[in-house]
Length: 275
Image (cartoon, rainbow, N blue to C red):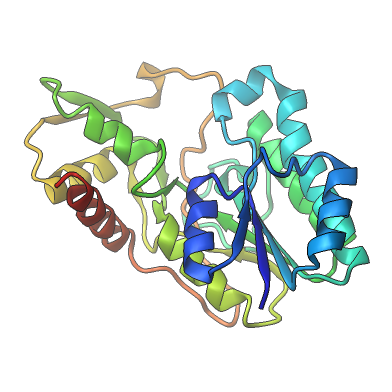
C-alpha cells in the first residue's frame, strides 16, 4: 500500500513514516491549506491512503491567531478530504481530546458530545466535521497528550527542568498520555480495516501532569522533588480540559498499551540517545 503522510515533521508524523514505511511530507513540501497544491500533488502521486498529521498545535498561540488555526485545522483537512474523495482515496485525519469540554467523570468515548472550550479545540472540531462531510471513507483518530522521544513535548520539557531545586506541576488536569509510536501502530492496525468513522487512540488509563512527571522522573532515575499545584497557579491564555481521558467503544477494539508502558519506552529511548 502506498501511504502518504502530511505533517511528517511532527511527532506523530515522524512515527507514522517510520512505522508504515510511508512517504512523508513536511509543511514546507505541502501546505495543506493550499487547495490547488493539494489537488496537484495528490493527483500526481496517487497514494492508496492519506494520513493527515498536520495541524496548528500551539494551543495558547491559537487564542491570538484564530485565523491561522482555522487555516491549518479546518481549511487544510477540508482540502484533503475533498481531493481524496474525488480521487477515491481513504483519509485518516488526526484530531484531539480538546474537542471535549473536560467536565466528564469517566473517559470520553467516540459517541460522547463534543464541546470545545478553546480556539484550538473549536478549529480541530471544524476540521473533523469537514472531513466527515467531504469524504465518507474517513478515519478520524482522536489522541491526547501526545509525546515522542524527539521534538518538543511535555516530558522533554520536564526532563530539561530536572536541574532545578524542585519542579512544580499541575495536578488538577487529568488525561491519557499517548506515546507517538504506539499511536502510529494503532493507526497501522486501523487502516487494515474498513471501520470508518471516529476512533480514540490514547494511552490506556489516565493520570495528571503531576502524576506523569513523578513517573517520568522515576523511570529516568531523577531525584528532583515534584510539587503538585493547581491550574489557577499557572494561568494560560487557552483553557485546558480538567478531565480529558479518552476511552473507546469502537469495534474492532484497537487499544494502546497502558500509558506507563509508553513512558517506559520513552525513557529508554532518551537514555539510549544520551549515551
